Image (cartoon, rainbow, N blue to C red; front, side, top):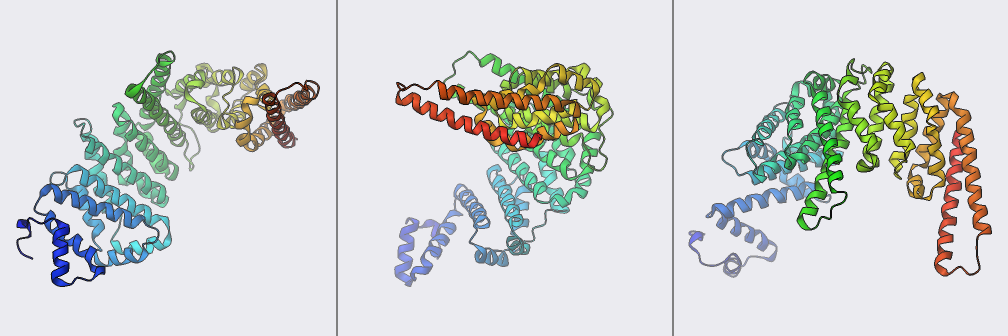
Length: 495
């Protein structure tokens, strides 16, 4: 059909004319309409870019569809180089717009996710020339390096979206292909991600989270990645970034405790500490991976000289500002530091880390399942040292068990925490024999207190109680039943 660009008819009118003129059967009409749209789209650069985006989005939907096996087989039979074409689009920095490059990167990520989701998908996609090792991986790493460097001089939203798509891809790549760990050192992944740790732009904090999480997974899977991370000063960079974010959260919460925020300002101020806490959590996990090597399980000789212990002290002193998840991660890191290098306890004690942890227990524990389950492990680590064991006894730290088993504000948290908590307490009392007597006395105290609850409910009831108070009493009875079950589990575990 010549001179389509000169036609004044719209796409549907042109389709109708073709159907009438050539008697197009119903099953081919949508395909014809698609061809008409694409043929006319090339006359306008704007419309052409729009249809390029539609094509890539359609591909993403195709590879993610669970019931499109036949369509996938047909597509890659006709387009075996499609993956390489997507990589070419990603590399074309000067000739292709940022949004299309971002979509191409998301399409590669969707294809990788589909490839790793099942053996059947992997078999189908094996005909797509999809190789994310060797040359293609290095190509994408070079693209990521340049994109990260460009963040310092560009605030273009498309640049942020492009870097985010690349980071998502590599996070998925590391998680789904742990066997690639032996090649990580030479791949350049660790030095590529490190510059983001120094990026303090609040608008980039989600990118830093992706980078830290990917580094953590790399170090979980590869001892060579741990070594390279240490050699390049990654531990110091990450510890410094963690300290910065911890101080920001403490300062932010302090400034806004007594202020009323509304509208857009409220949403922005709410999102910021959430992103910071997410970064703190993944940073603690990454530091735990970085300071422990499975093939050589010893701590760095100067690990206690870093900023990490001081940051953990700040978290323990401001538990209410961070929540149970971060508290759990902080206690886990402290426990690992002591377990893997018991000789560092004296230095940590001088910095006040064990005392700060014990004070966080004595002053009141958060009603969080994670916060509850990590405490026995932290106590066990401190008790490895004679001085630490003495401090645990002096502060009566095990007394926290009475509170969590007899205070109804812990009921919901204990519903999830009871099994791991019971196992942790049992392990603590088994390994620290000098705490067993105290532990048994505490369990007896818990039983007596709960028995007293039952006596109070039986003697304090009144026939004049209204419906509301009756419902409340019923609720308390159910709570007491839960407490009894919890104590039973704890008692059996400790025994």
